[in-house]
Amino acid sequence: MHDQLSRGDIEKMKAELKQRKEVIRWELLEHVKEARAQGDLSENFEYYAAKKEKNRNESRIRYLENMIKTARVIDDTSAENEVGLNNTVTVWFEEDEEEETYRIVTTVREDSLHGLISNISPMGKALMGHKVGDVVQVQVNDSYSYPVKILKIEKTSDESSDEISAY
Image (cartoon, rainbow, N blue to C red):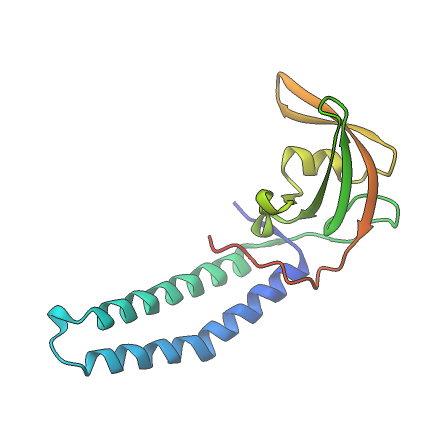
């Protein structure tokens, strides 16, 4: 399966990949060499910790390379008055009489605990392309949905510091 990523997501991944290959990789190799030089490897915790960190970095490099290679680039532009990627949307839950704010992002940046929901989540799908004042049905599964009203849409830049998820 290919992940849907915006051009901004891919650029952030490329920047992280470059940093990991050109800087972090060599720093971690140096840590491994230093730890190895401390003597008996069977009781050398620093050596095992350095190797583990080096391996984590190499795993992250492979992950990023694979994500970039297999990504399906999606357009992150939307009309001025409609919900699109990287927009912050305030909605009203009539059933609960509560207002909540979410930012619509791609799957690699989603973090629902911090208000970042993906464009393919039930809420994200329901909101995409709609305007302030629209009441949309959020389809959770075949037998349950609920209405939310869009109160406010704020255009936000993809240049924000949202991190790409680790895995």
